Length: 100
Image (cartoon, rainbow, N blue to C red; front, side, top):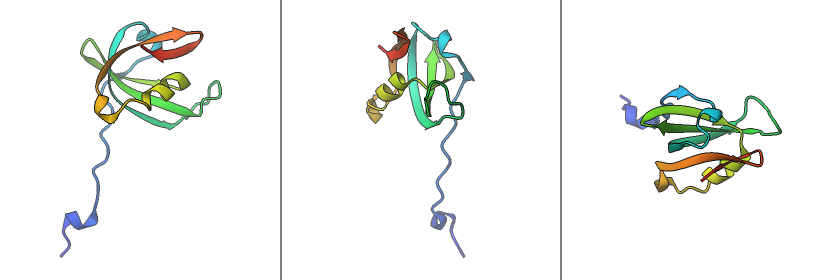
């Protein structure tokens, strides 16, 4: 008889926690970034073909943020895996979003 462990089935990744929030609601506020993932964008805006999903907390309340910002995408890829969670503020500078 087979054993479940023989099937080498991995548990699916848990979904992000929290309600969806717009980036405009978190600008210039300290947030804690817990996790992220990058997927193909379902909506192509301003040429962005990737979408950054962030699980964040504001004042201890978890939220999920979606953005196609290349500045945030490029920066988050450079954070080491053991660097999470981390505190930051998202600012807008010359029509680009950046972590500070």
